[in-house]
Length: 159
Image 1 (tube, rainbow, N blue to C red):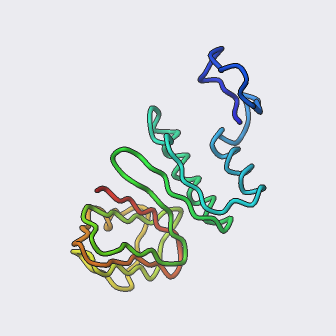
Image 2: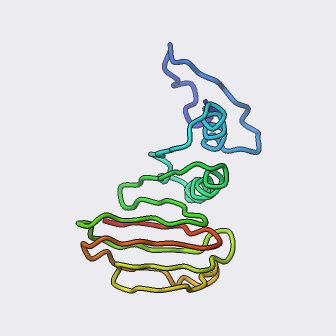
């Protein structure tokens, strides 16, 4: 499903295709996500959505918020990081993980943000999209949790 503009004439024969117009409001990824939501899917794992063009990477990060607002959960995988979107809820990291976790307000202020079990713990703080207070926290191998009472958080995990 897509406009296939980046493939040119190299579309393999025999694949089931649904070609979209090149000029449209949705990205190909968003069109595919809408299709899968209509089919009842609510858990999404996106691969290959961060390479090449930063504008498409940003659009795919925004698509995480779109999915959250449709009652779905999604994870965007990159060779260097994993991204997910949390809105009005919590996310737990199991014990045994190490690495860096960055938390950003996304789409507006995020109220009542708590981070427990991480190197830098916060309780009931307000994050805003114009100040990157949540960058570069650390998982310490113990269970950790990030929560937000109101608003959306973009969470990046770098192992």
